[in-house]
Image (cartoon, rainbow, N blue to C red):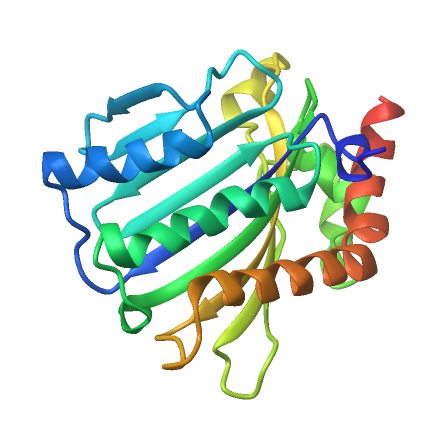
Length: 247
């Protein structure tokens, strides 16, 4: 059984490589890169260019499980929504990183930051911020604000970033994103938007001369899952799911 799939309505595993220099955008280079990826994942057959110039290759989005990959001016992004296992997503991300030095001229020196991120979406028709405050608490310093007569929570998106090493080059960040606005609260009419929890492990700066993007991502994935099980699942994800279930 996929443990992560049971924690939320949807979950996803993403990789972002932010580069110091502009990535190539020539037609032949971009199509060759995506064509090589498609050879490994033939169902990624939807290719298009966004209005802002980003290039995207993806599977059909109407499937519960789908892959996507994009090239932005200074970022390569790879994502997998509801993979059977995290390892399955890692294979896709590492392929993109394996190809990038040879097909997009991205060297380990060109790394601004490398991210491994796991995200969880919770569907909830109601005041997202109020629910998050109720499920996770706001801390003793601010909890009195919630007791003000007639008060309604309008914005509560807790986040924290932690340095994992003395030089602060490896960091982890957890962020909760809500999608309720004042208009919805005022009218008491809410949409079916999702509350998202993002947990990211990030490596800043150029890699060591003998390091590779693939190995570094594997380290970030290991650290991400370890901390997720120790500090996020029982403390944040399950309380959110339980609060939604009681509404």
